[in-house]
Length: 473
Image (cartoon, rainbow, N blue to C red; front, top):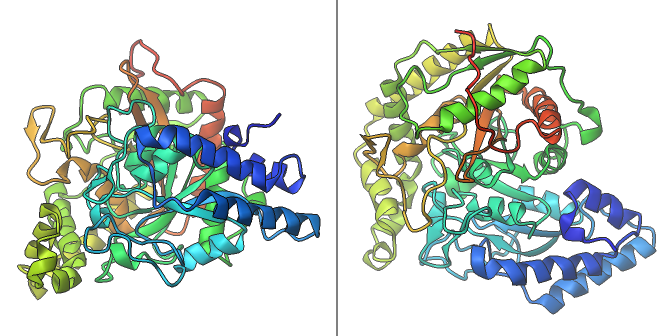
């Protein structure tokens, strides 16, 4: 007997199309697993009625019987991150202002997923408006880490990452402004891919002022699943999975940016675990060298704050309504209040700095094929803690300063994949983010296929005590 929840999305797709398992049985297995695990992890929200989901799955079976297959996701249960619209389902944004409000249309990438045959069963949890790297809100509560429910799943795509890792979903979408695909992927030991900006239709809810920070992207338990969902979300013009092949790691040049020469505070053990994983990549023939972009990193943080705050400026329409402002979280109000202080000069300076940062990375790419960083600066922390107040003795001055490692790829609009690095001695997950030049999404994902092959052989999917490999300076 096949347990559909234990299959990758790609293998599940094959099993459905080959009629090895019915869509109705897949749906029952998925809903049963959600019923068993979701009360603990709280990854899936706004779950549809079971009988309606099974009825749609039976229709999908009838279509297959008649020789019609809508796509690789035909009959596959699916839940969309609760920042995007699915016709007929609530889009709550994790906000008390919008709780329970039904969407009357599909967002573009959601429509593409529907056209590929997916059956929408609900939404995945997110912090209010996707703000912050901890998935909690006043509507649905806290989402917990798949490997230890006492810890955070990360955010803002924490619901998606947890649902994947616990096998409540076969594949999932997320969105990423400040590591929101990358941090939860690392914390839950799955894969998150932030595409080059513009590859996937923009998520207007997360980037309202068109400052080109946020993008939608795929998550998966395997790189193949991640690529297949990416090609679906991106739509025409992106080659299908069959066009991808694992890159050769021999002679691949990787620039290890580490913590930007000590600029970023990191929790003890994070760098060691990442360097152990990179050492194994080097064993396959890759050259892994230290790389330090020539840029003033405090200037990059100032740039980030200016553009991030400005992205929330349109939310003033809610802030100016006292009744709605009362329903807003402190961090959402703060983002809007900071946006009111931004001047045209500050915006202009931020755009100049962003261009300078892109040029600094371009100079790095002249020497390296791939640039690497830790996917997070801390290991998963308590689910009852909203954000870390300090890292390795350094105080954090904002609720998102602890995610600063993610802003480089975002501001440059680069394709970045978060891949598992392993677990520490306490069983806490960590990942590495690998980025390529803008538009080189395929190159980054083909590198990911090669990296995954090493992991699949058991080389870097668990914590291994011992000395850290010394990387070339």
